[in-house]
Length: 132
Image (tube, rainbow, N blue to C red):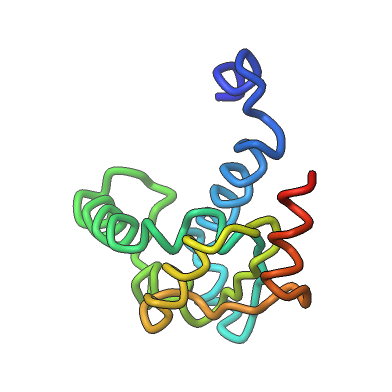
């Protein structure tokens, strides 16, 4: 799976870190960790590594996989995967010093995970990133 990333230099901060982190968080959710440890919380950066934008599809496809009994390692969860993202995951704005996705996140705040700021005002982060 890494080869297509490596040949174009996409394995690091440009894209690979987000893909890898999003994959691991989704694996934690699908494995039932939050059913076993319902008070467990995770904090992930980059406004959720893309997961908040995939919630509908993740719920839909997880339900289809469970119904079809397609994978032995995919079992029914007590709740929808998106419920765990909303209740057990906090996202930060770290690494996302660009207003559009932050505003999109703010608009959809009722339907996504809880957001926490990385402690640096957006205007300061934007100025810093424009100089880099």
